[in-house]
Amino acid sequence: MDRRGFCFRLGALSGALLAPSSLRADDVAPTEGSTVSPATAGIGASGIEARWAAVPPPAERMAWWTEARFGLFVHWGIYAIPARGEWVQFREQIAVKDYARLADQFRPTQFDADAWAALAKDAGMKYTVLTARHHDGFALFDDPGNSFTSMSTAAHTDFVAAYTKAVRKAGLRAGLYYSPLDWRFPGFFFPNLYRESAEQMREQYHRQIRLLLSNYGEIDVLWFDGGESDWLSFGHDMNSPDFPKRKPGEHYRGQFSWQGAVVNEAIRKLQPQIIVNNRGADVSPDYYSREWITGDFDRSTPWEACYPLAGSWGYAGDTEPMTLGEAIRLLANVAGRDGNLLLNIGPRADGSIVASHAARLREIGEWLGKFGESIYGTRGGPFLPGSYGASTCRGDTIYIHVLEKSAGRLKLPPIPAQVTGAASLTGEAVRFTQSAGGIDLVVTRNSANEVNAVIALKLDRPAGVVNPVDVEA
Image (tube, rainbow, N blue to C red; front, side, top):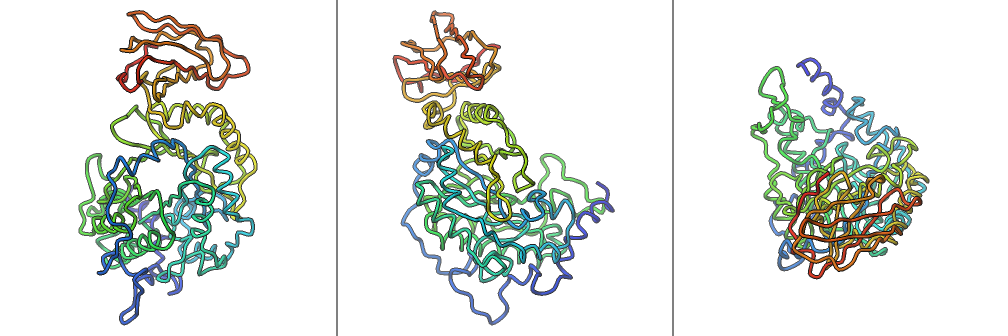
């Protein structure tokens, strides 16, 4: 993109500097002489009190998450009103003051946090993550330092409070998505040129993280997005008049800093048990996020793949969701690579969930109710994913997920364990022989099941002793 085009793309959003004071993002900074309560003070303020005494070791913090394997992602905010996705403001270059007026229309009369939580549970999900604030800057929680929130506008509701209460009541783990970047601040796009604006954006970030981790009880997951330093200026080199995109391996080299180490310290003090992904600058991650991709098998680094159920993260009309087969194959492929799946829905502006989306989630839950032993609490492998499908394992059992419906015979490589039995969880007839050359598995496919034939191989020892091994096509 050339200089003129890049400036045009940023032009409407830079109008924040010209917006009325009630809409300007730079109003979030406390004015001289104002008083700020400890809960709303910046994270760097003195007197941070630890809620718990010590940070549990990573393995202990991550145990429930690794067991869970499946969670619900919810993208929701005022961007649901135009119904063209959560990036509508930037993609259509809607001026900050015009976009902010959407908050006056945001009155979600059909919002029911208990129903959301019940749906996640019906879907077989074990945890949930809600967008507390996306890149547009609109917060679904109360922030006395910022009027662009669901509490201070038409809804007059703290949705994060209702959500966390409902999720816990349903017996699920509660997570929050948070974006440090905010399109209302020119300092995000030009952190050197508009240093004061960038620092005000950082102050908001620090303050709001403290609010979220202080006012809503125990939070299980903090899901950062857009908080890496390389996201500043959307990855462009603003020191050049041509504004070129930074090349692979090149990093932001301006003077502004998110001061993420301060945030990291506060997170671990305020919520020692919390687990955090890898998208916050200088915030030590517990796991890594993959978006729209299953990627490679990886048992060494905890990771999670996130996908939208119906093609977009934020609500973009009553679009058709992925089929049940697509959803089950996705879940098996992710678990078989040793990851978690975070499957997203985007509720309508009124808080309701598209009926076909809810129905699909319940169908997934029905499948997991029957065959969930092959997903929950498993590790990926030892047979690496291939054209046949994928495998998971737990205890003394390896689960073969035969995702290719034409696959009737599998030649599995030799393993240092004896197979003592083979049975299909999904109703297929199974025969096997084992020799020094490997395991020959014959599956008579069930015409009623073209989604995922799950074959359980019982071993004479723990499956964990078997190292990951390729399966020939």
